[in-house]
Image (cartoon, rainbow, N blue to C red; front, side):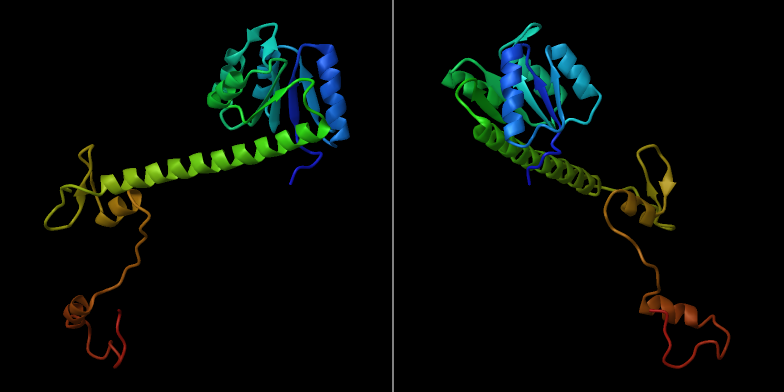
Length: 213
């Protein structure tokens, strides 16, 4: 749900364009937490400080131009949604900045507060879905790695059943499996072991009908 608490960084060097965008944000009810910076370097310093939810990014800045501006921000802040704003109405540029990692592209003088609000909402939603997807991919890759670690030949002691690790240490089988998988262990006695150990118990110590299983 889009609300007035969205923390927005506006990177724009033209005062008139910045004022117009700020007015639109106010009309859209999104002006309570807006920070304005006039250069890419200043914008990056602000992002490094944390606390930003979304970036409104002008392509033509004093210290950066065109796609390089988008690439720099997207590569450094991979989880942040970015809406590009430019005076260039170019379909190829629109596709380029999306490929570089931006979530939306707005042409100055061709959008109002409603379009800006919609672009911000969609950018937040799209990036959130992408971030969740990336997180799931990482978790899946980690799970596959753990599974691979449990495949192949494991050097195990035929007597105590300890496993030899890559650094030539011997660890308990349970410890090795717990470390390399999501498995957890509970301990007890199987029926055959129970019957074997029961023979060594003092007479009368095992009640009828009671087992350790």
